[in-house]
Length: 162
Image (cartoon, rainbow, N blue to C red; front, side, top):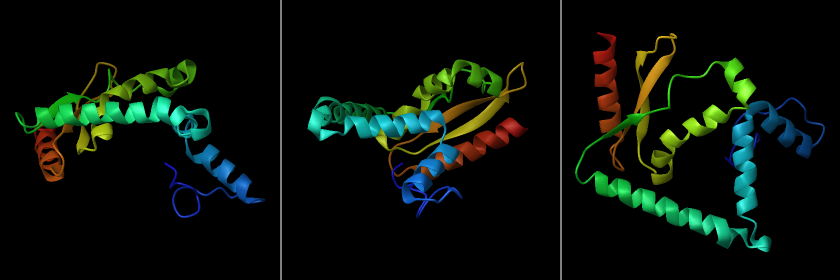
């Protein structure tokens, strides 16, 4: 996320009275509360002077390695893993606003394993719930199997549209 500094990448605010103001305004305008919170937490856990790097960051790297290894083991037996993308349908904005995005926070758990393991994944809409909102599944494959994920997503999308 650090590369989205509004200088080389990402949204750049028109407020440029100072470099600090430009950075602050750009991130406030372009990034939602959850993303800003994650950037802040990432910076916090990397602070060497308080020992947080050892206490949290290096432990998180170990957990990430475990997730990676478990998924690699699974891909020795299967070509693809299919999971829900979220716990249900997409929430309405009014519900998100009222719950301070806590459902969105919880639903991130469904896609975090692929992100942490660095494997290709894609979310594909597979239906519509009674309330008219979409339901999706996530397809995951082993490293360097991006094409397989895209091919299966394309086939699945074609079957759903029939």
